[in-house]
Image (tube, rainbow, N blue to C red; front, side):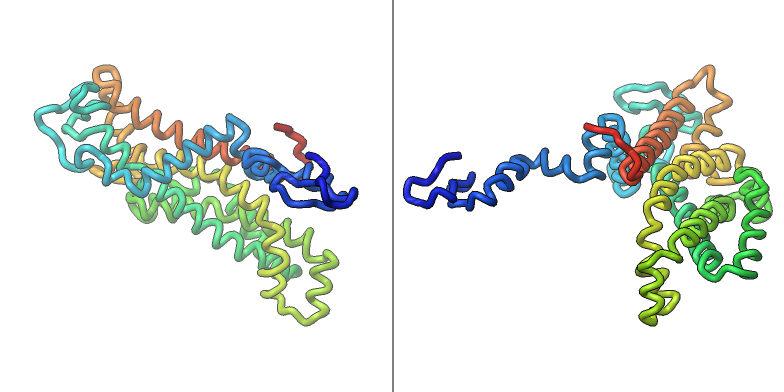
Length: 318
């Protein structure tokens, strides 16, 4: 930076060559000079991108989402058409992850199975979140007898472990992915109902909510415009932390025969199909298990990163 040769002494030359008032000079110097510095000022980006562990989680989740959309299209073989010339064949240049006892290509089934394992988990959790948030909002905002009834029903569902409750629902409906989705939605909605109720109770007496109520805003408008946006942080963190567990539960239900049925390329069902061949054909269980592990790990890492980013008490520096 240098003084302009013809301008007044109170002006200096900025980085673009234009004259900058002396009062604005410090601000020009303080501006980020690179995209990296600008991104670092964003708390969410700083915690998810510039932390290497969280970045691994983001990349894994991005890969999983890509496979959910394009996995079946980029698979080298059909996930449901066997190759009888390579039954129980080990990993090779023809079949990278080997084949199972029928001749299905393991690699192709893993790629195509992402939408079954992760997609159904996402649908199940979305249904649980929608139903749980609706009841939680009603319970926290209405209070009184309505709150008491909803919370006692919620406590009744929370008294049972999620997997046990899911097994009971799936057994009553019969095996299948639809039963698994409904079963886990029933198991998870009480968590979100109680979480949002607590947020509503802490926010509905705030000054800005009282002001909106005094201005005649309807209860639905107050909930939608003022309370729900301020309660989304903990809810988003809970979703990202729960999705890994839901993926495991979907795989568990398929493993015991209550979820996806053959020849569906769901990862839990693939592990179940290969467990009797673990000593002679280790690849049949190993590769679907690794895919399941990576998916859960990725979502857990992203959940930890979001929790740190959305927690104002976090002091992690980068």
